Every structure is written in structure tokens, then in C-alpha cells.
Length: 500
Image (cartoon, rainbow, N blue to C red):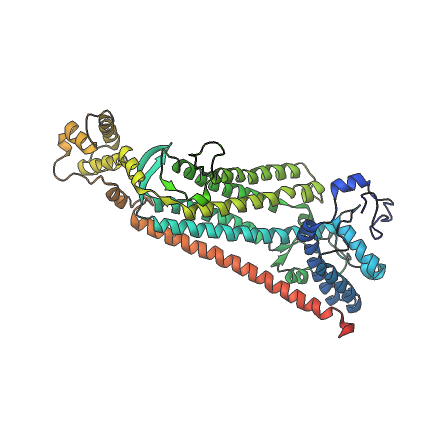
């Protein structure tokens, strides 16, 4: 259809505004109906309409016959993929085009009552929450799968030792299991933050109308129930004016993305030839178009780039909402929401790729062992042993063990114990400390260190928490499915009764 032609059912004259918007502006603002609009807008609009019509009929605000006619037509439109609207330019937006079609086909008396007791404002706020909860459910599911992969790797590698690093320098011995469970602990907090936003999406704004509710005796709680929400908004202005749920979600996603990018950074460093701590299989690496020897784990770079998107989206959404009135606002309700979809998709992609890396990464234990030895990672354990055995001030011993480390580095002694025997023979009476990485890690029990006992407890705690997140997600999805089924059954009982 030509961009400057109008559908015969498009709304031109509202009584107050007598002409359609300029076609060029309409093309920029609203575009045309395509499959993405059907999936992301019209299917949700139709679902809300079915709930609204059932409620209106039950409340006595619409006859069963009129409700049946509209439900029949809406169901037909859904079944056809909204074929009657596909490719049609709109002068007033998707919903107005859709409503105009229903009025055109069912008449003003019936189609014109669809929007009674309701506004495009509370409809839009509701559709946002319906769509967000679906996309967020997928992201939470993927994060739970990443958690399971991290905890599985933590258990598998609980006896694999490597240096813990601070400032990119070898620090103390730890286990790879301790590292992975540490990352999982950070993601557990991220899941808690996202779950709090998930719970906020249980509030249905329908009934708030344009901004001050309605005088029609509607039953918002019934509509909310039919759509799978737990409750309704307690304030009409807040329901329409606020999109802070988008900001909180993007903030939580930004923190999650930061955790992801830090994990990817470690993997990128540890998979270099200089470290060689992990082998990543061929199916997760790239090649050079010029250098035949190259084996690039570029997926990690993709992950880090994807993780920048939520933070950019948060900045964009916050700026769109900044300095706007606390009322209905296109800048808030439309423009500030746009960045969230790409941010959620990019983060979901990053989560999936990270899980694949974690699953496939094979530790190279001998390289980790070399770095444990060369990094003199037993120095802290030796200092603590001396302090506790000889009741000396820690700072004094810290200085002396530092001297020993320097002597080893310049080649005067083979290892720290040999240096101690030469520099401080008074400290070598009786048995010497076991400075093997295994013995050191076993003794790091306090302060939630990497000892086997501490690691087992933490992995167990996180596994239970992950299961809790999974059960919460399953409960929500089950409730949504039950509500959708109930709505379809009630609406189905009204469909085409004349043909029964």
C-alpha cells in the first residue's frame, strides 16, 4: 500500500482533531504493521482485549452478544496473524489502527465500546509488563543454566589448584572450584536483584485509564487475574507516569553484565599462550584470515562487547525519563522503553555464550602448577606460620619473608624454606611448615577461604539458592499458563454461540 494512502478504517477525525498526521511523520513515528509488530504489540493487545471484554461482560458493562462479536473478530485476527493490518501504514499508531478496524467491521455501537473504561495509556503500561515478564523469564532461565554450569565446574575442579591473582600478580594458592563458586556467588546476587524486578511486574496497571481511573464500575482485579498478574496498581497516576521498573531492570542487567564481562576477561587472559590455564575446543574459537597459526577465543571479546549494551541502554532510558512531568509522557512511556529490548537480548546472548565457554573449558593443571611455584604463592602461609609459632608481630615477619622472596628471585636460594634456614636459623627448630599448595589450601578455612570444607559448604548453599530461583520461575510460568488457559476457556465459551 502506498505510504500516502490510508486504510478505509484508519482513524482520521476524532472530533477534536479532524485530519490525519502528516504521512512522512507517521512513517517515522509508527511505521507499518509487520511480523515484529504482530509479535511484540498486537498479540499482547489482543490478549488484554480478551480479558477486558470478559471482565466487561461479567460486570454488566457490555452484553454477552456484543462481547461475543468482538471476541470472535479478535480471535479471527489473531488466527490470521492480523493479516488485515499487515503492511498498512497508520496515521495514529498501531492500537488506533487496530481499534479502527474493529469499529469498521463491527460497527460503532459494538467496536466503539472496546475502549470504555480504559485508555491507550494503561493498555500500554500493561503490555510493557506482559512483554517484559516473558523476556525476563527467558533471561532468568538462561542465568540459572549459567549458574548450574558454574557450580558443576566448581565441583568438578574443587581439587584443581591455581594462583589467586591480585593486580595481575600471583597472590595465594586457591582452587579453581573456589574461583568458579565465587563468580556464582556474584551471579546469585544478580539473580536476587532481577527477581525483585520480576516480582514488581506482578502488578497490573489496567484500570488506571488515561491517568485518573474511570467512572465505569470496572473490576481491575478480575482483568489482572485473567492476565496472570497477582495484584493491581494502587495509584492511577503512578501506574501511568512510572516506567522506573525499566530503569531498575536495566540497572540490574548492567550489574549482571559487569559480572559477565569480568569472568570473560579472566578467561581471555587465562587462555593466552602466556598463561595457558585453559584449553577451549575448536568449536568455540576463531581463526585468522591471514595468520595460519592463530587460534582466537574471540567469543570472549563478543561477550564483553555485548555486556556494554545494558549500561548504554540504562543511560539512554534514564536520560529519556529525566526532566519529564510525572504524568503520561511519550518520552517516558515510549522512547525510554525502546533500549530495554536490545539490552535484554544482548545480555541473553552473552549469558548463553558464557555458559558454553564454561562448559567447554578444560583446565591445564600443569601450567597452573608452574605459576603457583614461580609466583611464590606460599609466602603468606609461611608468614602466618612464623607469626603463630613464634608469637611475633605480623608486620615484622611480613618484612622478613619479603626478604626471603627476594633472595629466591635473585637466585641466592632455591625456595622460601631454604632462604629462611639461611636468614633465620632460629625459625627452623623442629618441623618445617608444609608449603605445598595442597596443604596451604587445606588450611585456608577461616574467612570463607578455599579449603575443601568451606568450598563444599558454599557450593551447597549456592546450589540450593539456584534451585530456589528455578522454582520461583516455574511458579510464575505455571501461573501465567493457567491464567491464559482460563482466559481462553472463558472467551471460547462466548465464541460463535450462534453456531453451536
